[in-house]
Length: 166
Image (cartoon, rainbow, N blue to C red; front, side, top):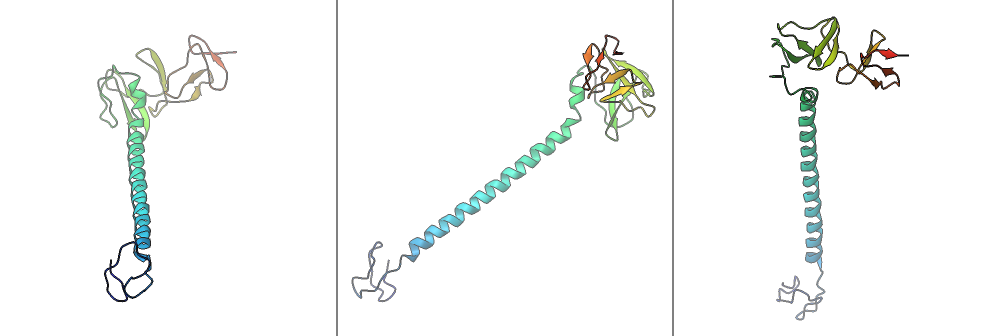
């Protein structure tokens, strides 16, 4: 380090110039400290932004796969179809609503239909009904499956045929 007053070489830890007596200010060390603090803050901000982007990507991926959770319960289906044309014995979605095509490829509408070992109710538009009472007698759960020998979320009991028991 050099004295800013006379240019004489001085020790880095010196408080005064031993040639001219000029008081040496410790600005450089202070500037380095400030610079290090700024760099640390910038690194922290970049790390937070990267973490935020990762979280968004994970939840976006999770949201996109959420629709398939229902089908995971039934691995015997050959394929999941999200749009028509309808395949035989398959689930598919139209406007975020689940539909089912029977063995002839016809959409099930306005009736109960048994898929594997469970009964499902499809309205007149072919949409599988979920989390509700059907005909004030049967209850379908969050997955559209008719409850049997169970209590409904509102506390009523349905028997082995899925009928409300008073």
